[in-house]
Image (tube, rainbow, N blue to C red; front, side, top):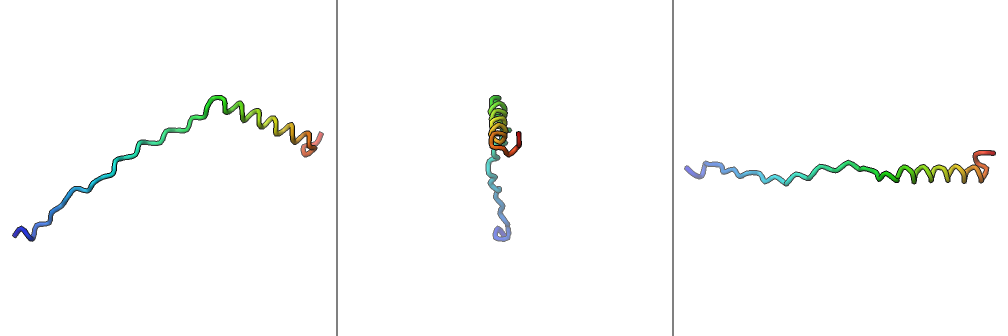
Length: 52
């Protein structure tokens, strides 16, 4: 009679990964981007691409 019994075992769950933290840009990054854009504009003006 015990041959007809189906034995179940618990399904092992993988531990949950911690949620990803939101990327927070450093406060100085905006200034660096601003300076790089300004340098690019000046370089384009000097090369004559944007005209004078």
